[in-house]
Amino acid sequence: MIENSIIPDAARAGATNSDDVAPIFARDFGDFTWGAATSAYQIEGAHNADGKVDSIWDTFVRRRGKIKSRESGAVACDHYRRFDSDVALMRDLSLQAYRFSIAWTRIFNAPRTRANDKGIDYYQRLIDALLEAGIEPFVTLYHWDLPQYLENTGGWTNRDTISYFCDYATECARRFGDRVRNFIVFNEPMIFLSLGYLLGIHAPGRRGFKNFFAASHNVLLAQAEAAREMRRHLPNAQIGTTISATAAYAASASTRDTAATTRFDTLYNTFYLEPVIGRGYPTQNFPVLKKIEKYIQPGDMEKIKFDFDFWGLNTYTRKIVRYSRYLPYTHWRELKNAPNTRATALNWEIYPEAIYDLLKKYSAYPEIKKIYITENGAAFHDELVAGRVADHNRIDYLKSHLREIARARNEGAKVAGYFVWSLLDNFEWAEGYHARFGLVHNNFLTQARRIKDSGYWYRDFIRGKTHC
Ligand code: FCB
Image (tube, rainbow, N blue to C red; front, top):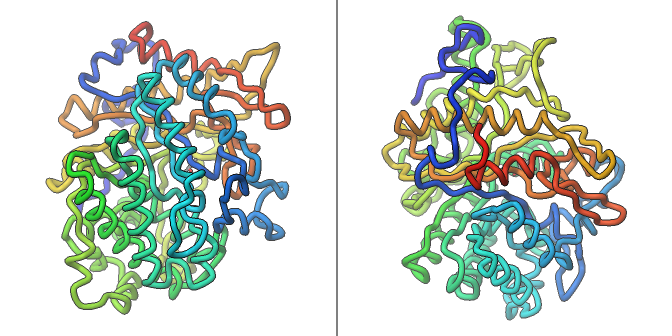
């Protein structure tokens, strides 16, 4: 267990965010990959084109009251039809890598059928366009869009879903593995399982411990089984997976606040990692998590392990945690942002040191060989004025986080790349379209794209012309 520390902001050594510090250039990161990220449902649109069937997100967005302003990803950025010009934009931004996800429902539109050639063809064309532009594809297999036909038979709570996922992963390996060197099996199990299976605020909208623990265990089994299949087919590929990470700090040094923070850290940061690296589920400090044991069958804890070539970390903010007597099971509450805190449009506190702490924390695991920051970025109320988005707040966010990454890397953190979330403004799940995360602005009525000042800044940074 890696200890959490209480970090009084003012006393924080090494914290950087002023201009009187030494400039850091992209070359100072050494051998490093610079990219941007998206996911299928958030940008593709074309929700029923060319044989694609519904995923749980297509159906979830139709439910009343689930999505702000009743928006959906049915059209989103229409990237499915505009990927060519979007790849041209990526080239303009000098991106070295692009992380995107494959929609399972474009590949298999019914259980145990032949793969859908049109869906496969689409991703092959996208991959070819990227390679032609000199951009390395990082392909996520599962960014939350389970086929609805599998949800109808229990989805991730049903162990049978594991073999369907393996078939899908194998098909992706066979059809894309000649051109793609980097695969990411899952995106953020903790987030889609807690929001989608425990709290019911993301697809598929299920609630309760039974759903949550069964689904969690099955997802981790599916992850390792699929990763093994992929490695068998593609011995030279880099097989990774991505977790969400939220640095947690205790509100005080009291035993109760510290213990609450440890529980928070376990659920948010290690529960979906430690079984995979052979340490078992970290339930010792958090008894309610023991409920997962009910779903473990003989041999599972061997099968759940996989030696990933890299781990992706997605991180945006931090949490300050206090003990709470009133909240059942977790007995913690997250403090609200202090009045003078800098925060994004989603009210996520901006706290760059968190990324340093997380990189140190995960780098301390000997089982983790390599880390990519597979998502980091910020939503702001961007305005397009006379053809320009002057998003200096986003530039500051990126710079301050990159400086912390450089600091961690200089101290030996195993971080090898960085992907901004996101390439484009897109459909931000239950938040709809008002949360704009893009380096590129999108007008969702006309689909006109416009590179924001942050996009130009990132381009110049990658080209070595400016520093963070
Ligand atoms: C992450 C998701 C990504 C995006 C960002 C803001 O949790 O992986 O799809 O929504 O948050």
